[in-house]
Length: 309
Image (cartoon, rainbow, N blue to C red; front, top):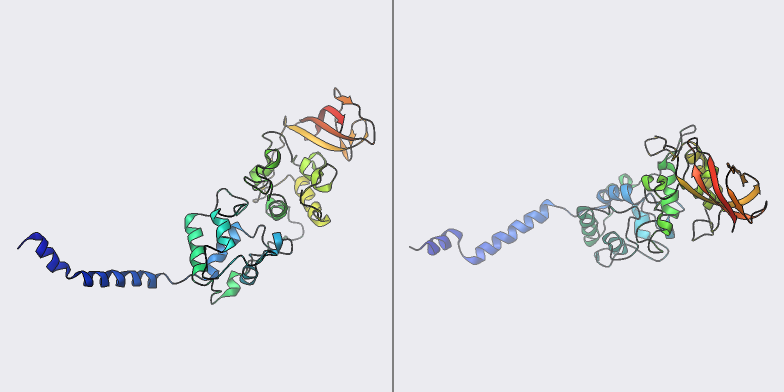
């Protein structure tokens, strides 16, 4: 008996092998039941709801609950049950629709996370037996708690990072400034936009207040409200703390470029600066000016040039 004949006898007819394979696939499918929203919620909580929660959610798209996710945005549903390829949520996390989500990426969602979301949608986007577990409450601060990046990141990422991220709404981030992470926000690599402990010397705050033009966010009005601006100001005043509450170091020697109204010699709006040795070119009190200078070790500003804009 040949080896080939003996192998056929051991394996049986092809139809039996096919039936066995189908049974194994069915078993694998049975072992992995269709996911429901409580399995998707941790991904949304970790990577998406920093923006997509509460009344300020972009285009009204809230991903902090099943009802919010299924309602969609002002442009319509983002989830089409049993149509993962045509669902905007899946297209955004895959990068097929721009800007790719989450705006805090890269890194983007992992392949396994994207596959889980697609499986959930393809299977019908079920709510699941315990929808309450899928609700993602917003972080609440207690009176007296220091303001950290966790408190201001929903504002910065939700309103600012849509442009200030790689491949944002305006293409490359304006002036190369990223606002999609703590490290990028406090970076002084090209110049300091945040001076810990010195709100008036922080370009970011001056922009969202409207002291510097153009006022930010660029898609305003509406701009940030008074509560949001006050929270960002507190965060900077308390040291621009990271999510663990550790204050940032003062970027001594870093360059600054500040815009505002010159009140008098050495005073830009509420910022007192060292004007000794600076060149004031065609600038008088009441003029809107640009100040270029450096940050001293104590966080104060030493001007090198002040000129009218």
